[in-house]
Image (cartoon, rainbow, N blue to C red; front, side, top):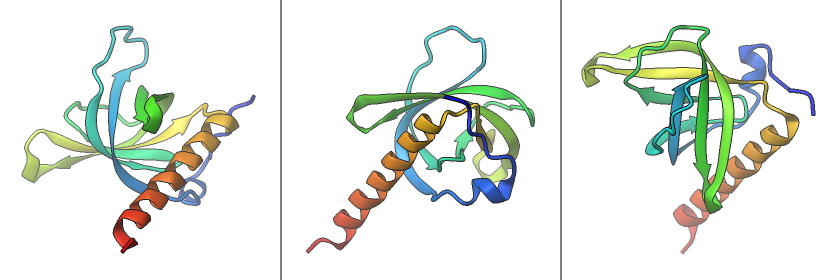
Length: 129
């Protein structure tokens, strides 16, 4: 299936966003070492992610992202660094803003399904009597 990559910030913002704790790993593309999954707060949409990191990436860097979704579904994708904002109060931490690149329509739909599931579970937990 051909990649379905949004080309502008406006298009990426069309996707619903949710912040969830997920095991994840970010590595430089081509790093063949087995990366360790660490549970992290991830702002996730079908267009990209926002996450706190300690590594200093450059705008335009292509990274390999692995997320462990519910039911132990491993989701792997490439992301492009849009920007890296320093977080001065957290010393050595940065807020990484990245978009998915080369994501197939099937993988994007998988993300949308899980994001809706996260939202549904959160609403049930918060609003159930």
